[in-house]
Image (cartoon, rainbow, N blue to C red):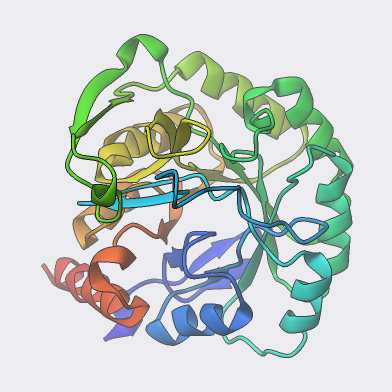
Amino acid sequence: MESKISKITISGVTFENPLMNASGVFSDSPYLLKEWEEAGVGGVVTKSITLEEKKPNDFSYNDGKIICIRGNCYTINSMGLPNKGVAWWKDRLSRYEFNVPVIASVATASGDLNEYNHVMRELSALVDMFEVNVSCQNTGKIVIGTDMSLLRSVLAMIDVKNPVSIKIPCYHDEPSLRYVMLEYDTFGTHWLNERVVVKVPEKVDETKICLVLDVLDDHDITCVTSHNTISVDHPLIPSGRGGLSGRLIHDIAVEQARTISEYSNIDIIASGGVLTSRDVRDFLEIKNVKMVQLASGLFQHESPHLFIDDIKKHLLEGNEK
């Protein structure tokens, strides 16, 4: 039956199907990536890897502060790019063989832009493709993808031969922010007795997206990953702000992918609030969306195998109609 789901090629890399995990969710080691592969994704994406080992952001249970909040169909995190560092990943990846393409997500936690290329050089022989994360909200540094000068600097440094996708943030229109009330979160109810109101954008900033696309085109980038979490305020996050994922960001994630497609022919790896096969279809119906990254739905299914099986089943049913 799986043969009915078409293969996809991005920059010379072929994927058996349009599904892959999103970096940061159940991707802290090659062992966990093998779980995604065995579940049936077309490609696997590592945790965002930095030059040196990065510990999680500080938090205190005693003070009622946590860095990952899980609610009904949403997650808010301020993890801060925790990972074992490139030396650890290089050693561990060399011990595994994958039957699907491996995409290494790379990032900087210190803000030093040179880290990107250093990490990519170390891993270039072990992976099929890179995802350059310029969209993390939780390191206390500027979000590189929001500064065109910094973005240009990062792209100018890339000198590996592997295909590259640039993982950009959500470029939302500030006046479109609307207030949304979150249900009690799973862990936060130990300290929080009131629902939390967050501001979620409804529209993208087309002007900013066009500026980003021009920068990517100037550096011959042929693939973009859109997008990361959206920054919101929350009283349980130590810094006061964390990255929102899940149902509440799906509509604007779809809009950003559609806007990119309208203004460019660049290949798109789409992500944002994928809980069901319908969410996957929302993206795949957009011109130039080649792959869809999965994360949020994993928390409902508790297993990559159950999550992927459910999505593939309904995708196949749709193909047969």
